[in-house]
Amino acid sequence: MCPPEDQPDEPHEAYGLSELCSYCYCSRATPGVGTAEIDRIIASARLNNPGLGITGLLVFGSGVFFQWLEGPRSGIDVMRRRLAADTRHDTIIALDESEELRERLFPEWDMELVSATAIREVLVDAIDDAGESSNAAALQRLLAMLDRTEMQV
Image 1: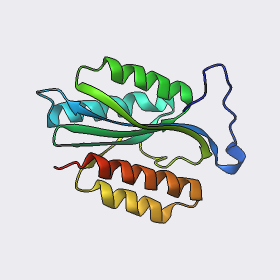
Image 2: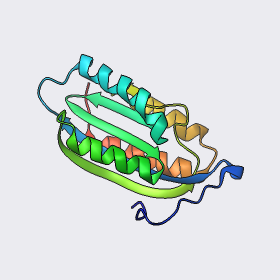
Image 3: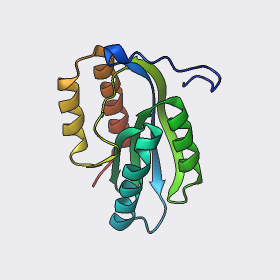
Image 4: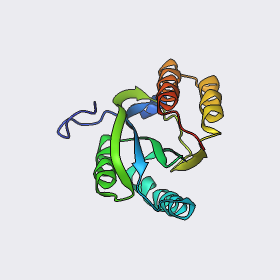
């Protein structure tokens, strides 16, 4: 769980590490959400996420959203409020929320759309490339969560 807002973040930038909150959820898309709407979500995220310090990925398949967000606690809190108010989601289920000292898993992805068929390959490659054991463990958790959602294209 991320710390309360009154506790300061402690950056460790000299080591490439920082206190990062991560939030992973899945939700059912409301009727009418399709490719065009997903494209608008990604465009909006790529525009707005850098200002919040958010990176991550979005998987969409079989009418299910699966998303991993990482960034400062304040940015994650903003995203959670936005998601709760977003009418494109029906029942958001939090799968994981944590805070730990580590490097970002997806540092170059303001928001990357990954197909349901490609997500396993992306995560396995990221696990293989993870330099930090905490990153590899976080990616393993993400892969296990994805397996539990049983997403289909």
